[in-house]
Length: 261
Image (cartoon, rainbow, N blue to C red; front, side, top):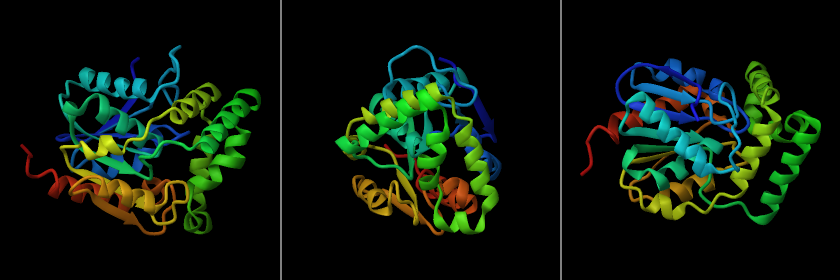
């Protein structure tokens, strides 16, 4: 599986994995804003954007292995790996499966706990609805929770851009990813086993993965760093890109400046 990838900048490799049901297009402001500080690598996860889905059974582990192969293709031994929402789930799977390839971890607007049964059932319902009827269920049910109230009130262009990305998500990839996320394990043990710096970022208005979830993840690591982005919802990197980029730049400059044993 070869992932379609957009990259910018040079130096320390930082892989950013996108949210559901978007693509690497969501990281435009990060590629532009972080390129002076690092080499930003933003792949389309399988089935989304320019990456094909393949015939494998739904699995976040498989998505994590795709990222490891991407590093191989790019000639990168170790990288900072991070993701937002679904991208965070893939990042935690990557930490489980390829811990020796991680220099640092960024988890944005995501959670380490597994889905409770009602959430798993809802994912399956949406998967079936998208396969049967197309993206309308995403626009009516998923899109509203992706964006915080401040963005909805004040940044109509951002909301419109996110809506366009949601509408362009391929139904097969949407259903596959929902089923992969529904089957994910609890990842708190993965976080507590980390031997690299962790940055947790969350929008203060995020209702899907609220600040309490972010605080729990940051506490799971001895010196986890937590950054709460004001006036941002679930897509904090898209809604408040300047604040998001500042948090990442500071993390790279301070937490990763001194190599750990």
